[in-house]
Amino acid sequence: MPRNQKIKLGLFVLHAGYHQGGWRLPQARSGGEDISLMRDIAQSAEAGKFDFIFFPDVPGSDATSTPSVVSRFEPLTLLSALSGATRHIGLAATASTTYHEPMNLARMFASLDHLSGGRAAWNVVTTLSKEAAGNFGEQAQVPHAQRYERATEFVQVVRGLWDSWEDGAFPRNKDSGVYFDATKMHKLNHRGSHFSVRGPLNLNRPPQGYPVTIVAGASGPGLDLAARYADISFGAQYDLETARGHYAEVKSRVQAMGRNPDHVLVMPGVVPIVGATAREARDKFDALQRYVSIDEAIPLLSFFIGHDVSGLPLDEPLPATLGESEAMKSRTTLLLDLAHRQRMTLRELALSVAAARGHLLLVGTPASIADTLQQWFESKAADGFNILPPYFPGGLDDFIEGVLPELRARGLFRTKYEGTTLRENLGLPVPANQYAAG
Image (cartoon, rainbow, N blue to C red; front, side, top):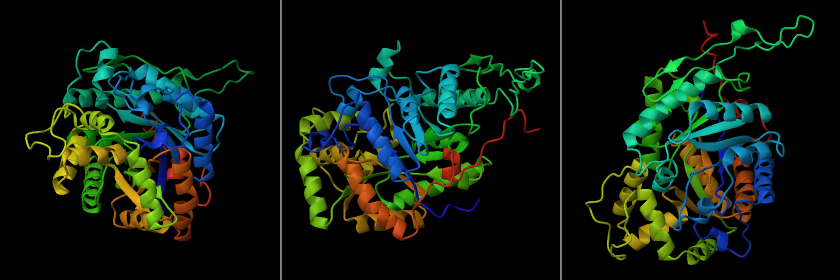
């Protein structure tokens, strides 16, 4: 399959907005338990022909957590509700391989795929939150390498469970009395380093074979996991040249795994702040930044780089001694590189993270934002993008009403959905059942 000629778009939803101060705008809506807001966002994205809507999750919070973390729906439950309020858009949820068990998770995502007619997607994460560890009996974070070892085996087990039943295993023939064909049922009987799972899954194979798999992470283990299992690689890139290098590395690792690189879509995050003129866009950004205090920005920066920087001088650069952490290794590296390249003080870096958390921040007109997205796409820095609106609904509306018409006018984005499942709309094949392949 040749590289897709149209940009793919996901909508990443932090209900209080991706910008840390976005929820404070007078026109903003927020509320982690507001199903009407979630429904409106999903239906707006579907009207805009986004490929999927994407709900992140962390199973824990504390007093320093951002509004979107401290209170929000469990995402699989939410997407089950939204599956009945939408018809075409993909439904992606984050679920942790560190704090779930494969049998339960396989069953939940298979159920969502059936409920939605083949629109489910799983964002595979290993969870870096210390607060989450405390909620599951751990006194400290599980070390990074151990989390990814578990994740690799976890996905293998889940996919084996999704393959429990071959096609045609449920004839439900009233005349013969045969409800299911036991010869098409397969027990997994997995015994590994982290899991012992018998199977089978008590649910027919998902409509997509496997729900679409998203892997976020750019550390070595994260890239290995993506190369082995991902349909979509999601990460933070703020610079064209480094994004091109990351894109090439993902594709190379995928090929080394014996997979088709065109079957793994690289989709970095983008925070768009859209104005009719460049000045209007800058004014919108400045208004957002005025709603961020440094006391709120420092804990967010500390979370993303895995180091507590609250006691460091605000108007000096970060110490050169800060290195990797057991949290998000790739994001730590990216943010420290950003601070070094742009000679940022701690204050400047914290306020930058409050706006975009290391993702590509685009402040401009619809045409200028479309120019950048087109450049990244055509330069093989991205196959598509996860859009991170600074607030809802206006931040999303600005992108749909301004940038999408620009992309469509250039022939770079769809005018209608191509299929009925998320895999069809993404141009991805249905994986063969491992038991039926021979």
